[in-house]
Length: 395
Image (cartoon, rainbow, N blue to C red; front, side, top):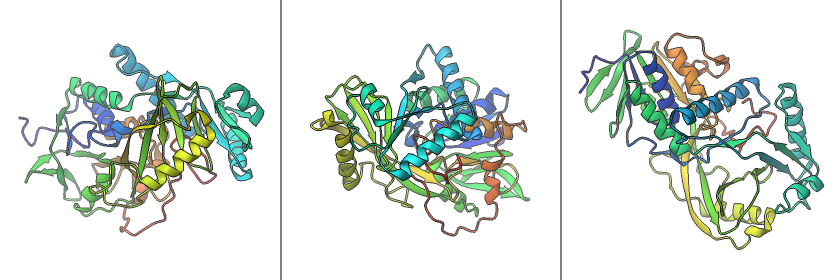
């Protein structure tokens, strides 16, 4: 076993952000260990739908989305397509004037970045996707380049890449607290002993806040739960689709199966007590909405379903990079967009290596909340995990 003073960096959390950062830091020659309270891909990183859009209204977000695509494409080449990016396209629909205005503004903003989609009239939607009911639509917005990656495959491959680069991964090893001394990070307390390192990255998702609280640091996050259900028995040729007002999304999972994502529930709950089963009322309401939108699904049975616990922030931006004392870094608060924006963790790794991040990470740096006292804040995360849908969303 590696001795307690042998590490240059400690990463807490073997989900997507932690493993990507660990891989990049280990590639640079640093001695890295990843501490995971359960097993690799034990929580939301393995449960995600895996949607990765390639269009955005934000230059920051667009840079991250495109870098995520590049990372997946690289892993596709070096693993013989164990991980691959499958283009599926996307369509968002609005049924009222507010939703229509949101999509129109999104189209204009994306066009300014050279990443525009196409606004469609209901008649155009009906022609292209006859399985969709369009009688109540106001407008739709199509993005041709949206893609899909299996999040569990991506997580496991990133773990393998990190190990290949020299990182240790300790499963069943929950971090107890961050050790801070003389105003800077000294390491992590684990099982009553201390692993020392001058760089510590907390990328433990919903468990980041309680870990840091035990260390006297308050992270401005709230948890929420997203559930999915799988409908089977109906062939569709639909792209990734969603509704602004209804707040669900759906995408093909297999030849005759459809994954349906539900709106958020269980705001600010205990991450150790959330139910892995989708909330029944939300599930039933969403199934009514989607069966109304796709009449062919009216009798499609629910094969299975699951839920994951995710993290929101006060301003809907993630918490990345430096936080608190020198040497402490975080990567959390993705609000349900952890797969599509996983490349942001590469920017955190670059900060850990004293390098310039590949994109302008400054507005997302967690240090903007240094000194946060642990007070409450309003939950603002809308169901935007499929893209930007509101004028207040900054991503």
